[in-house]
Image (tube, rainbow, N blue to C red; front, top):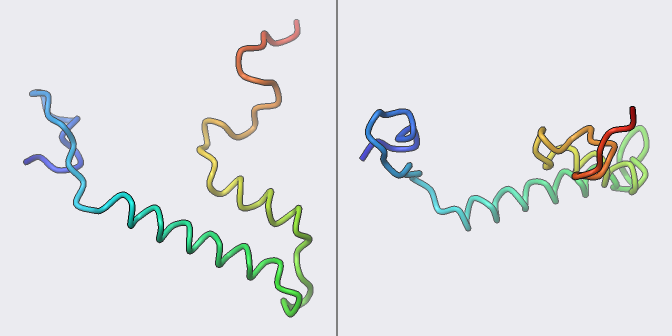
Length: 80
């Protein structure tokens, strides 16, 4: 009824997204795979990206911002 922004309304309502999450996820995975393959392609100019560097780049692209930059495991107290 209110669409994806239902959480903004004063009366509690479940958000509704007009897409198929399975298909959206499948499409996103396909696109990420295509980018990875282009990065490591031996014919890439001026040169292919090393596989490990490409993997790290792709993971940074798909990892939520809230998880990026964590140097310490979750649950560990920072050193003082």
